[in-house]
Image 1: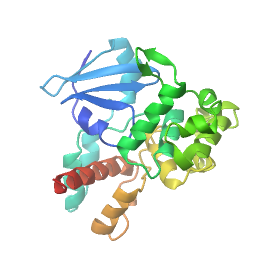
Image 2: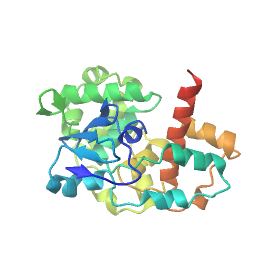
Image 3: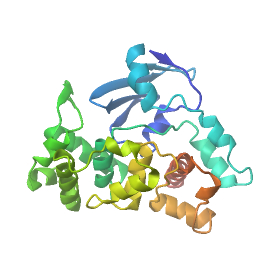
Image 4: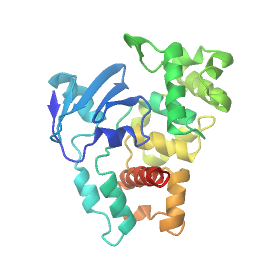
Length: 270
C-alpha cells in the first residue's frame, strides 16, 4: 500500500523519542511493532512510502496511528515569524507527526524512560517484550499485557534493566490488570482529569504524564519538559516556552524543538 503525504519523514518520526519499538531498517525504511502487529515502511525516493499492509488495514489502523489526516503544515504556518529558533526547529523536524499509541504500552514505556537515554529505553522495552510478550512473527514479540507484566517477579523485571523503576512498572501493571483503573475510559476525560488520573500512578510525575497524554491520548496541547526542552527554554525563552501562544498544538512544537536540539547536539559532537 502506498501513501504520499506532506510533512511525513519516517526517520524523523523514528528518532523523535515518541515510541521505542520503531527501528530504522534502511536509509529511509523502518519496521514498526504496535498493537500486536508488524508494519514495514519503505521510502520510494519520491516522497512517498510503501507500507506492508492492505488498504483496509491502513484505513482501520495505520492512518490513525500516524495521524495522516491532520494538516501539520497549518501548525508550522502558525509559528510566530519573529521566533527564529522555533522556525528553524520546525524546518528541521517538519516530517514529524504525533503518533496515536496504545495507552498501556506508552505508560509503561515512559515510566521506564525516566533517567535513561533512548537506546537504553529501547533495550529495556525490548527485553520486557521478550520476557513476557506474545510472539506475533518469528522473533518479534508484542508488547506484554498488564496481566503478563503483573505476574513477573521483581527479579524477572529487574532482568529487563528497569532498575529502580521495577516497583513503578509492577504497580502500574497490577492496577490495570485488576481493573483499578481503565485506560480506555480515560479517552473521555478532559485534560485536567486525564493529568490527575495519570499522576495517580506510582512513580509518574508531570513529565511522564504529559508524554502519555501527548503520545497515547493525542492531547497535542500537552507539553512535556525534559532536560532537552528545559535547556531550550533557558537558552531561547528566558526559562519558559510560551505555550499559551500556541493553544491546542504546543505539543507538536515541543517535538520539533526536541528533535532539532538532538540533531544540533549530534552535529556539535562530531
